[in-house]
Amino acid sequence: MNFSLSSKAIANTKADCLVIGLPEKGTWPESTSEADEALGGLIKKLQNAGDISGKNASTRTLPLDDQPWARLVVVGTGDDSARTPANYRKALIAMMGALKEGPSKSALIALTDTAVTGDETVSSEAARLSLVGRTLEDQLYTFTEFKSEKPGARKLNKVLVAASGAGKALKDAFNLGLATGRGMNFTRDLGNTPPNICHPEWLAQQAKKLAKDHDCIKTEVLDEKQMEKMGMNTILAVGKGSTQPPRLIVMEYRGGKAKDKPHVLVGKGITFDTGGISLKPGAGMDEMKYDMGGSASVFGAMQVLAETKPKINVVAVIAAAENMPDGGACRPGDIVTTLSGQTVEILNTDAEGRLVLCDALTYVKKFDPEAVIDMATLTGACIVALGHHATGLLANNDELANELLASGERACDRAWRLPLWDDYQSQLDSNFADMQNIGDRSAGTITAACFLSRFAKEYRWAHLDIAGTAWQSGKAKGASGRPVPLLVDYLMSHAGK
Image (cartoon, rainbow, N blue to C red; front, side):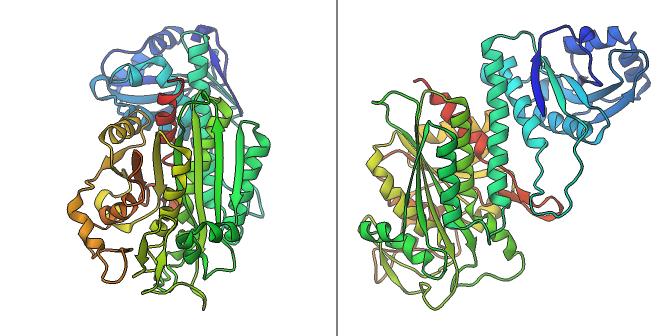
């Protein structure tokens, strides 16, 4: 697909299809007025007759005669006062649905002068261009690698995006959006890959390939013998029941100054989760291939960094294992000594994500991090609390939490903060070890984060529970690419500082 910016007048730009935005209430953007003039007032006539609507995310495709464009796609953009970044993105997604299904080979998108509510970080043309670029990439995603009959090539192969100019700032914003979309798609590819192929060593191979393809990425992989020597017994305990050995994957991007402390991303990489001896029900277990969604999102964010090369230092650590139930698997009642020296009584082997993450959180202290953000498909309780709309956020630092929340709002990749009060810590008390790996049935997302917090006391830390947002079920089943947009916004907000 060929994506590019165009600063030429809309009426002088040829394409098979022109896409314009129509507000339900508010002022027409300049591009819509210009298109209406070129079309002899057609848009206004159709609106007055009720044939087209400005309702947000509505679309109408109209054939044109004797014009620079063979078709016109009218996208409803809603009320000017209610056009948040999230509503604007809904309109963009609807637009891409119309273009994907249509016959046009080329399209001119004139939507970046549509006003968006908010401060400069979300309402500028650069911010809109970035969101358009990301939506172009992520809405064209398909995963057909394992289908014997491949779908035919999509007709749409060239997209021009109208912009007020062709300066570096606008180009960079658009390119960052495209890169973010590609990072999301990389995350989705990893998540959608079946577990008979995607196992810990395969994930390690993807990290090595990323380093091979990009000189700015350095990769190191620790095998089970190295982890055993170091004392990473909880990662090893989770992987004991599988023929696929666990791996600790470390990727470094050093784009900032040598003295700059790195931001560290930690991803849960359970490539398949049966629950171990605490076996899950069979229904829907196939979706447990997505239990490596945290690691997949780390990969996606690192790819964006490798493409855009911001001035920041980032270290990514992935704790990868497969949770299976054989004769060597860890059992409920086992007590394991973590890399930190703290002991854990394993009461439920299906609470394995926190076990692999706790050793990784101890390991990353060696990097003297500016901040550590872990992400994991950790608890079903998070889906009960927040559904599939928001990522759960817990943190030991208010400033870090607020930065991540703001990034989620800007990126239309929302998170919602839950408390991490000491009141909940007692639910992890054990009669036989320093702690147990589960509490009672109440506050499951919070107690899981309380467990992790015991290994993150020496730095600023935040935990993202993406159990409800990393993938979709049902007819649209597949990895979502979240929270790559949130992570990218957060990292870029610190680049060059």
